Image 1 (cartoon, rainbow, N blue to C red):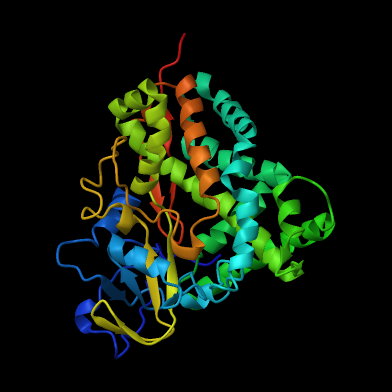
Image 2 (cartoon, rainbow, N blue to C red):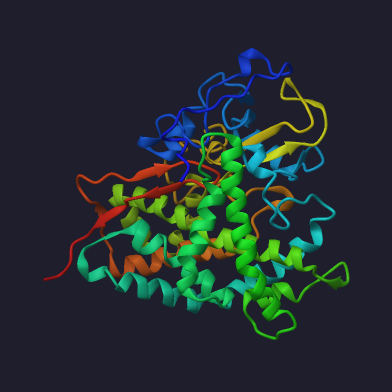
Length: 417
C-alpha cells in the first residue's frame, strides 16, 4: 500500500513564472498543518488578516487556493471562466475522474443534471422519510442502552450508507468494498501526484465495474429504485449511453457513501461539547429543523476544485488556462465577513452564507436528502439520548482531503439502571 501524504515527505512543484512569489504559501490540502486540533480549525488558519483572495501552493501538483467566501462562491458560479473539466486535485488524479455529470460544463451538463434532479428532488425525498427514520431509529436502538458508542463507526459510517443502499436497492454486504472505492477517490493515497492519480483511478474503475452489471440488469425495468429511474432516462431524446449511465450511478454511490457520513460526525462532536445547544434543540422542534442549514454552514467537509478555462486576470493575478483553483468550502462558511462569529453554531442565524453544497450549475443534487438525514438523525437521537458528551481521554482523529473525515468519535451518556 502506498504511504499516505500525512506520513511521507511532501513533494513540491516548481513555481510557474506567472505566479508571484508573494502569493506562495505551503499548504497541503491532504496534510493540513495543525489538523490534529480539528479540520475546520486547520483551514481557518489560512484566513488570516491581509491574506490575498487567491494564493498558490507548491503541494499537490501546484495549484491556487480561494481563501474567502466571495471567491469560493464566484469560482463555483462561473463555468465559462472556471471549468469543471477537472475538479479533483492533484490534477493528474482529477484527470482520471470520469463521473457524470460533474466533469461537464453547460450545456452538455444540463440534461444529466435534470435526470439527477428527477430522482432526488424534494418531493421524491419526502416519499422516503419513513424509511430513513426507521433506519436511524434502528441503528440508535442498537447502542442507546449501552451508554456509549463510537458515533463515526456505529452510526455516521452506517446510517447514510444504509439509506442510500435502500434507495438504490443494493445489498448491504457490498458496503465495505464500495466504501473503499469512495476513500480512494476522496482521500487518495500516495507520495506524488502520479501515485495519487493511480489510487483515484482504481477507485473510479472499481465503481464502474461494480455498477456495470447492475445497469445492464435494470435497463428497461420498471422498478421504483433510484438506479432504475436513472438508467431508464433519456438524454437529448435518446436513451442514456451505457458509459454515461456508469458515470451517473457511480456519482450517486460516491455521494451517498462519503460526504454525509463525515458531516454527521463533525457536528455531533460539536454538540457533545455544548450541552446548552443540545438542550436548545430538544426544546424547540422547529428550531431543530431550521437549524440544519446553520450546521451545514458551520461544518462543510468538501474541498474540490475548478480548472481555469482561459487565460485571464483575476483577483490581481494572471491565471493560465489549465491552472487549478481549490475551493475549500470551510473558508466560505467560516468567513467572518459573511457570517459574523462564524465559530458559533447559532440556530437563529439569518442570512446564512455558505458553499457546503457547492454552487452554480453543479450545486449538489443530493442536498435535500442530506438535509433530511441530518434532521432525522437529530430527532431520533434526542428521543433516545437527550444528553451526551465526548468520552473523557479519547480524542477524534481528523483527515483532510477532497472530502474531510473524522474517526474515533467516542460519545457517552447516562443510562437508567
